[in-house]
Picture (cartoon, rainbow, N blue to C red):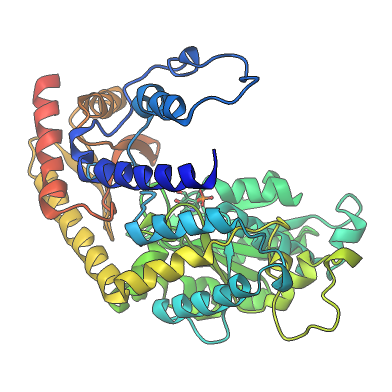
Length: 465
Ligand code: PLP
């Protein structure tokens, strides 16, 4: 392919993308394929000579598209969305064209400085204090791993990287059962270990960490010779939207000099709206906070906004400077690869710059507020359905419910709804019982799209009974 045909194909892909988004409601949300269906249509061996783009694109439409679940579909109420908005998709195209390696300032000065500015815009937009500084990580899992490594190194006097952990005191990290599995993984990868992740019971309507029990657990661990390193709190847990009381968590952390990381991967987006910020009161006392703009702001997947109060602690944990990465004689900038796990970094900041400028903060707020209201309306419609119960009340736009019947019936209903194809939802567990999870956040969903979900659930339930 030469650059002239590249331009023609680029225009064709742009048309395809616009048409895809405009007609997406006509597609079933979830792919209607069985495991192996797609692979069976693909040659087992790579081609020895190049194939025409026309053929590759035809196969994309014929083989790949039927195997895709449509995350941009307004009937997507499963997991959390991975939204993609036109300005951020277009910026991704520019990012792909430049294919910049943004590891240090001098390999991409504009990318580096734009990252600083855009993250500071977002810091202000979320109402975080001035001392917080941000970095774009690849995912919330990566941000949490960075936080786990930082708490590990901080607790070990910044010597764990050199000594390894085998001869060191056992570290402890405190969290609840409501947090995402990326917290477990961070414990595995950081070498702290699953057994040293202490689960503190939760309490209250928001399933918040019981901070009296937290304090007890820390004191018992110290008495038993462990070394507490940090606390991982959540604001908007994945399963039911659980919210830890950050001010209380931070107060206990201060008593024992512990590092606090707040996983707000989804709910952090809602903090663009000042009225929702009571959900993370006290966040200014945390050391590290993460949120994912694709989950609610329409920032093209992937990327995570990671804010830290003391970036030097990230540097102490992750900075490594072989001679070839030294930027001799150039001072006064950040090398973001020293704040992250990977050396190589994409130019993700560009898409957030396009996104924020194209919509303006008020537009995000409007959409988030609408989603919260419409989700509440669906919740009330389900509450009125005969025999249905609301298991957890809405936290922002996430609530959970049960239909009449046992756990198996909940799964039957979820499967039947997803096979129907008009909407996509998922199941979860709450207090050992299966429940059905409903979350609104697809960027372009209208009130009609969202309220239609209650009708779909009712139709499918009646057909199933
Ligand atoms: N934290 C929470 C609360 C989540 O809901 C998720 C994913 O949905 C994650 C972390 C992991 O996010 P990522 O895929 O960016 O690692």
